[in-house]
Image 1: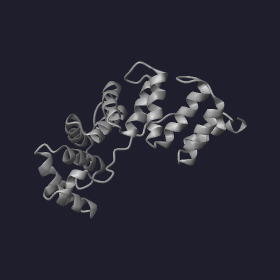
Image 2: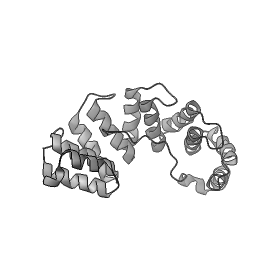
Image 3: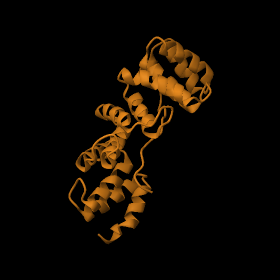
Length: 210
């Protein structure tokens, strides 16, 4: 298995702005109870008023088929509206959609654009995917040093798989100095944090010998 993107559109909790009374709070309550149809209707009211959090939530619900028939194109529509308002999670997910061609034509340059915006706002998964884009030269000129830069940021924000990619960079010497001992430490750190891919790297490069 080679490098892969973190490419899951998901809703991790609900935005903090849902704490005030009204459709957003009621929608959040319905969502958490599993009443997705009611939640969808309530979020739709606020999304049509231009609320970015509601727009992003609708996009994810369309993508997952919660409260509405699954519709990737409709999901992208709502996620784009939120992303254009600066919602970092929406920017990341729009990048994913463009990268894998889900709900929209595949376009690496657009994926890179949205990953960059989300990564600059601190979205760790976007930082990892931006690193992959730089390493593979997808949507941007190939640049191993930039790839390593973003892998380091992602790793610092707790993305275990980023350690695997840094370990590979240590082995290859692309983007950073070749260092098998450091590769060993990074692979172990990633594996211990739940990144199974680091185990593959450990075996492939016989890191136990360093």
